[in-house]
Image (cartoon, rainbow, N blue to C red; front, side, top):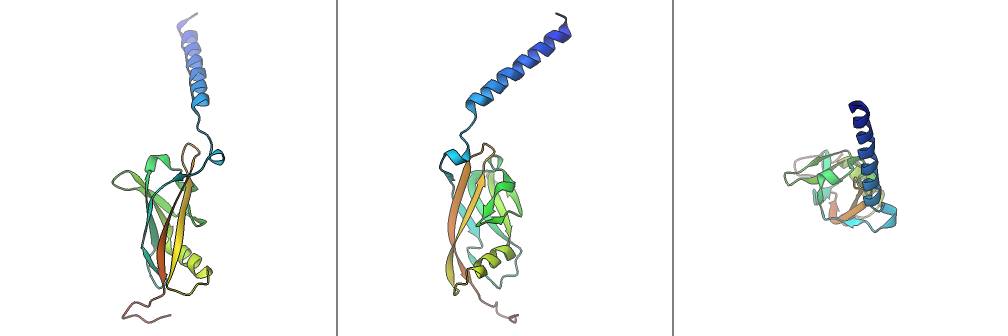
Length: 147
């Protein structure tokens, strides 16, 4: 066998071996197991419906490199963008107007405690979930007029 054919043969053999290792060690997929429980911290912890901010930020204790960012939702609100914090953990950003619309859609008298649940999928097909309760208020900031 010439050198070129030997390299091709070895390459195919390595690919087959790698495929067998991946197949044997592939994770159990999300629908076969309970979700991984994570800790989250929502900011702001008190959501003012009158807030003129742009995002709600959710800090997590799951490693950034484990998360499929586009799979992440907050109470069925799709993620706007994501990043890593300085500890390498996943940070999710959601448009504040969508979160305010969610709260207003509940038709609750404010102030009210609301549980926000972050959910998503890891790069290994495992579901994860975390929840935190925040307070929703409707207070006009001093010095401004209510719309």
